[in-house]
Image (cartoon, rainbow, N blue to C red; front, top):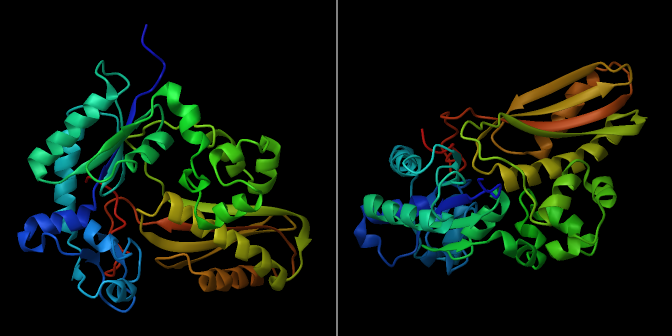
Amino acid sequence: MASSIRKIIHVDMDCFYAAIEMRERPELAGKPVAVGGSSGRGVLTTCNYEARKYGCRSAMPSFKAQRLCPNLVMLPVRFDLYRAESARIRKIFTEFTDLVEPLSLDEAYLDVSHLDSEAASIAAEIRDRIREETRLTASAGIAPNKFLAKVSSDWNKPDGQHEVKPEEVAAFVHALPVEKIWGVGKRTAEKIHALGAKTCGDLQSLTLLELTHRFGKFGHELHDLCRGIDHRRVNPHRERKSVSNERTFSEDLVSPVEGLGKLEELVDELRDDVDAKHQDRTIREGFVKLKFNDFSTTTAQRATNLVDPSLFESLLREAWERGEGRTVRLIGAGVRFVPLGGRGGEDANSPQLEMFH
């Protein structure tokens, strides 16, 4: 009888864009290299390990990176080239399994539970094939679920892999910082720290009731993930079209000023969610939803490519005016993404394109 324990691999290319550029331009070997926008509002999409020694990192404003590393070689993003490499890499994945879930241009989950070979051996073979066929390196994490596989892929970077076996899960997560939990960004981490929890082991001391009271529906996920439990399946057809959150209030809000106070926390959580779970997607629109005391709803929306608090404030005021004096019992805030294969703007936020077309 087949084992019910899943074998999940998370493959993450090493500084993908920069590595491709360095392969194409051998004279860059040993130099700090970054790919991204060089305009005043540009940011780094990635940088190589030489640049990281100076403190440069993805999503850092380009001007700040150049201050940290005056010799930084800044290169523009070349989508067509990166997509072509992604297609080659996916072809390798699909020779091992059809259960491939892309996350971004440079990473994906693979479910190899149905294969007889050890997952670690399969991961090593995939990484060897990538190196042979593309002259690029990849790191991999192997675990019984997606959460632990993704954490593990970062354990022996670059050009390495790490496996968490089923019997090692409890010990592995116990000392894991809460920041490593899927979906926990800076703001959520601060809230967890305020509860006295720095590690997953600490977080396990909080009950499900306490976590759901403080974090709502996400509290259920925190309760499981801090114990290394993740039931999410590898989904080859996944496409998230939007992400949002909302609050229903025990007492109706009577003015936009009250609403703005509640909206601020919602937008902070939304930004946290996008940064932690959806940083590989391009935002195309922001929206605010209101439900009035008569249970009618309205949604105000506007084009944007980022989670901008001032935009959401404007949308809330616009939606509130439609209530014509009615009080508000629910506020929601969210963003919609560019569909898979769509293009974003021209600066460095635009590489948030889904993987493997």
